[in-house]
Image (tube, rainbow, N blue to C red):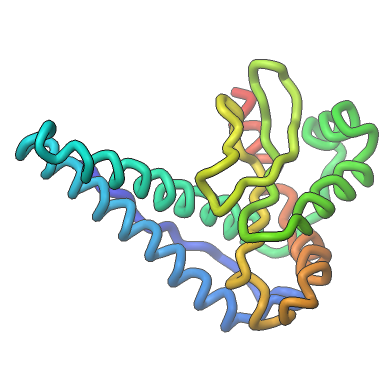
Length: 198
């Protein structure tokens, strides 16, 4: 089976989010890559050995694969959006789409920041729905429950506690969300949007 490779990211010093947190967070990302590969390999082995006999194990491993795989991909979007230094949203296609679908960029920011404050661990996501040609915001529980079928994630805000508690404490969750958007490299999100539309 072809394996997944961990990506590297050019993350500068960030406002509020320490280098130590990023370092530890990147180790977790590497774990998702490793585990996605390990689960995929085991599924292949069990299937080739005896799919009927191993049906229960295959079912459970398939569930686990979606967790590991989505954790890997969501973190890639997250870390890439912090790479290269903060950059503002330009007057382009993404800004026009945000204005068309949410009324204004400020309204969009209010919606996604409010979504990020949902209790529990998961992700606040901005998606592009190619079928409807529109942007959507949703919450994804953990990282495998609540993905929007057919939509492409273009912005992923990690709201698992490991992404902010060491720097902000649990009570600082709201400040972490604010700092995330101050650190955001919007050119990466614009690139994700362009790719999703093509």
